[in-house]
Image (cartoon, rainbow, N blue to C red; front, side, top):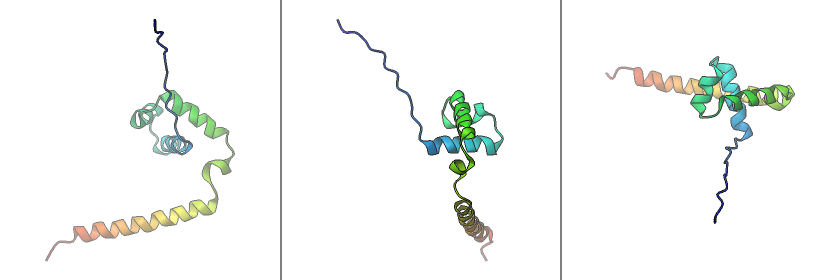
Length: 94
């Protein structure tokens, strides 16, 4: 007689995904329930990740100031380029 073993598969999430989920929740102002629903994760997992990231020193969460400034400059350049592309497409054709 075969015995059926109950196997529970847990979904493991990468640290980068956890960090981005927590950051999204904090910056968007949405409820944890709606964020968890959007991302397809359990609401309790999101709360647990938030507590884990709160316990870390600030340097481990955000990276260096120089990295953040470089990322900000890159995003500003990209935004400027996209605005120009949009404006070109808005111009009426003569």
